[in-house]
Amino acid sequence: MFLSGCGVITRGIIYTDTTQPLCKDLRGATLGSKAASGSSKRVEIPTTRVDIGAEWDSRAIGDIAKGHGITVVHSCESRRQSVLFGIWRRDEVIIYGE
Image (cartoon, rainbow, N blue to C red; front, side):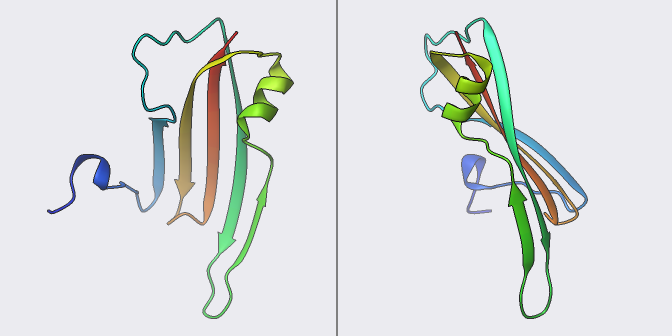
């Protein structure tokens, strides 16, 4: 009740798929003619004493832009997908530019 709007992070039990902007001020921003994305994946197995997990791939903005020939980044979004309390998670960064 005390947290509302941006203060609450919604997370589903079985499946979650959320997208939010990484840039705070988008007034007057254009998306550009190119879009590209990169993601990292994570598997985490909760146990009683030690959590076992692994994460792979890159979602760095510079890596994504360089790999797709984008020289000017206009805007970015973050997308998170998770399954079964976050045991499997995919974090993706989507960039827009020229």
